[in-house]
Image (cartoon, helix red, strand yellow):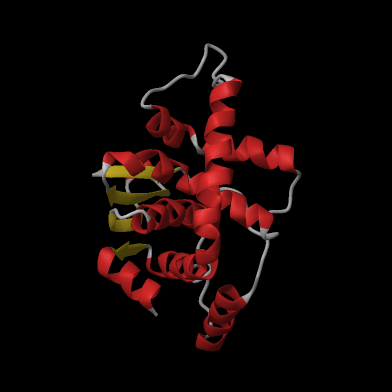
Length: 196
């Protein structure tokens, strides 16, 4: 099994905090589930899209997804992961799944920033994914990867993987919504959502 992880920073859940009426919670939940909104890069929604991207690529190319979850543990607070089982020939595509999902969010208007700012953020989020894609850590002394490797990874994600995911965008949106609400989806949950 391989786990793909995406780090979170400071994020709250809209259902927690001070006491709220049932109507307030339902209204906020309805707005959350139905609205097209701008996402905070590295927010819970964004991280969910990243992990769902890995999982969907795995499923679409014949692999299996054991689970997608947020891990609440002192050593990895706010870390999201997708645990996938797959044949080696699809490893590189799965590694690009999170990056490709982020690209689709940008393309669909959910991310409001310049392309340059956004690509910088995407590559920051894809360190573990690039290590998986290239079977090694090729960060240089300055902490950056060689530009040629970033281009190869980015082009593969945008030109090969994003087109695979694009027809599934609405399904991914539903999986993301469920993941954010439940914080963990197992294989059975994911397949049920996809078939609906």
